[in-house]
Each structure stands twice: as structure tokens, then as C-alpha cells.
Length: 579
Image 1 (cartoon, rainbow, N blue to C red):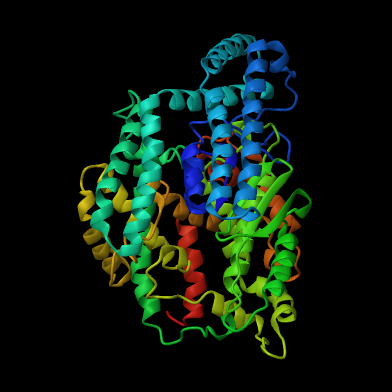
Image 2: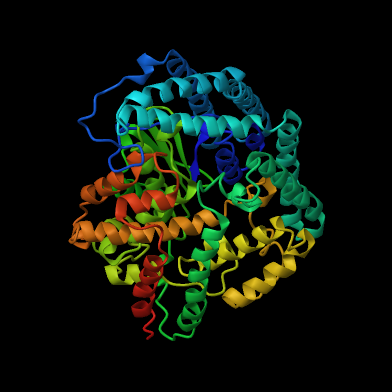
């Protein structure tokens, strides 16, 4: 879970950590904000890249308007970083009782208000317009490949888009949305606790209607070219239309439904014995710290803490923090949570340091690909457990708790499939894609007017049966389990599966570039793998216009789900001994 609190929204202050994640990214396009972290601003083989022999032009010196614009945008960045510091403290260190939490919420709301006012100030729009005119004049007489000017062009494109989308929302609608996020979340919590979808349905309808109203305003006159749902998706997955996702998800669904049925029928399920027992919390923390720093999390520019919900937060370019959670009766979730957040953090730690939106994460799908690359393609691989097994045995093998499992036994246990699991966040990597596709199909049809909100429970239960052959006992374990819709994060769910597919594709090409990748993992040598990801993904920020564009330029083809399907079949066919 990546929490970019430089994009923090007032409405998220009163909600849970997971809600904060969603609200934070929703407001990325509302706050003309920036990002952080290390690495240079220049990226090779990007849409704004240029030959190094072009004459250098310092556009900041040439255009006073551009210089003034960047000063204002960086000021907003620093305000949002201050919010991040306060919020990290709120979630990790400060008392959790109502009074201190309320006070902190007020402090954060003031900073968020100031940042919003500054980002929607008419002077921002004026400076963007003037700087664009200055740039166009220079481009008339400069090389088409001048890197400095192409970078400035991309910055102005991003900031104009963000400014337009934030200022096209009337104050009344913005206030209504913020109020609805709070009230709908409260109604969702009550409905989930009492298993009463009907009581939540009116608020949920308001959430969909309000999200559609905002998307319609942000879409503007592009009604023929951009569907309303595609506009909603763009908040989270820039440049990825619903028609493209339909194509990708149809391929995954048609392959996985029969494959999962075949795996379910196997009589050779792995043993889960290695996952349970008694595991000292401090021993788990130490093992996780040793492992996540070994794979590349830079503790000199961050820290590792414990929280109720694992998350990653960038407090500045030099301070990216992760949290995890631990249970004394199992060790696997704590380790995977730490590696997952470490993947998010390494992305943030290796973005450019311009403090502009150019050097922020391209999309939530790309961000998820980085966490899942390390969690699944490293942390759930056979090679990983050959390296990590001695670390885990040293941490967990005691007189009271014998932990002497082999690398093969650990690998099998962590990759076992739970065919009866109802909950998305607890699903294994084989069944998880269908949980996402179910939610994607439902929200897409509601937005299109093909499904009434009141009919969501019946549709949910029918799809769980057809996709996963699972009977849903109640709505709490069904359509009320996720927080996303209650905070208007419609279009967020598909990014989880897009990230899974991208992670598999990157892992394939990483192995092509590093043929002895498995041997390096067995030896605990991760530097070359991390450097490959930094070169291909991290340093580019938003220089590309979509996940597809990034992959096409960096590995030679757009997102291709076949790599993901091949990865799953390559793992589960031998693990479950099926043909």
C-alpha cells in the first residue's frame, strides 16, 4: 500500500489507513503536486529524451514565468511533505485516542487547505499559459530533440492537465464530495458490521453518482473519445482506457477460470505446516529488516516501523518510510508485507529529485508492479528461499518452536492456494486476479447504467460462483468487504491486476537481461536486479504517458498478460502436480 501524502486530501483525515491511500491518489490530479526522491531528472529512451549533443538551454533562466511556476509548485510540494510528516506520526507514533487524533486532523486539514488553495490559484494557470507561449517560441528555432525543452514541455503538459482538472470542479461539488466521503465511509463501516447492504445502498448510489458527476466535468468535451468510466480510471491509471483493460482482463479470465478448476482438483496440495507455530515478534522484525535491506530498501533514507495496516509513505526525497505488521502465530504475512512495502519504497527512493509531478509515480498500476515484482517474483521464488531459509531458521528455530523446514518446504507452503477464500486482500496470487476482475466488471457496469446499485449483492454472489466456485454466505464477506467505493475510488481496483501483469512482464525481461538472475537471488545478490528496475522504471517518473508507453519503450512491447499467465502456470503446474 503506497501512501503518497504529498497528495493528501482533507476528506481522508478521518478515515482508515487504506482509505487514506485511495483518497491520496484520487487527489493527485486535484493538487498540482510533485514527488520526491533520488536519481537525476534525465531519463534515457523516454518520450522526452534527447541526444546529448544538442545545445543546452536553461529554460528556467529563459522564461521568468516558467521559473515562477516551478517555485510555486515546489512550495506546494513542501507543504504536502509537511503533511506527510504529521500524518506518519499520526498513524505510527502518536496516541490513538479521539482527542489527539482530532487535533492532528485539524492540523492536517489546515495544511491541505493551504496546499489546495495554492494549487488552484489563478496565477498557476496564468503562469502555465505564459510559460507555454515562451516554450513554443523557443521550439520554433531549437532542435526538435532538445532535452531541456522537451522536459519543460512534458512538465507543462502535466501541470496544465492537473490544473484544469482541479479547477473545473465547482467548490460546491468539491465540498459535497469531501462530506460524502466521510458520511459514506461511516455508513459502510456500520453496514459491514451489521451485514446490512440495504442500509448502505443509498450512500453508495450517491458515491457513484458524485464520482460520475466529477468525471463528466473533467472529461469536458471529449465525450465521443473517452468513456465516463475511462475518465474515472485515468485518476489512477493514466492513459489506460476501459476498452484496453477489457481486452487484457478477458484474456486473463478465460485462461484462469479453467486452470484454477484443474488446480483445485489436484490431490497434491502443499503442506502448510511451516507457516504456523509460535514466532517471537522481535525475531520477525529483525529477520524482515535484514531481508528488506538486503534486497535494496535504503534505511539511510527511510525507516521501518509497525502499524495496523502496512503502508509506504514518502516524507521527502530523502525519507521514504515503510511499515509492516506481525502476528506471533505466523510469520509469512509479516515478511511478505515488509517485502511488498519495500518494493513500493524502492520505487519512491529512485524517482527523480525535481520535486515536480514529472518525477512522481506514473500510475498506481506501475507502483503496484514494483511491490509485486519483489514480493512475488523474488520473495515467493524457489531461489529466494534457498537464500532466506537460514535467516528464517536462525530467527524462528527455538527450543519451544522447532523450525527446521527446508527451502523447498518453505517455497511450497507460501505458494499454496486457498480455494475457499472469500476476501480479496487475503487471496493467493492465483485466485486474486479473479477477485479484481469481479469488482472491475461490477463498477464498470454501474457507471454505464447496466447495473443498479441495489443489485450489486446478487451480481457479486453470482460472479463469485461462476469465477471461483465459491458460495458467499453474507454481504460482509462479499460486496461489503472493500472500502474503495465508499470513498469514491471508482476505477482503482483494476490497477491491482495491471500491476500483477506488469510485474510478471518485467520479471521476464529482467531474466533476459540477467541470465543468472536465480543464482544471484540464491546468493543474496540483488544490486543488479534493482539497478535494472531503476533504469527501466523508477527514474522515468511521468515522462511516459501510460503504462503501455513505458513498457513499449523500455522492454519493446506494451502490457502483455501472457507473461503473467505463463508465470502462474509455470509455478502451479509442478507445485500441484497437474498436466
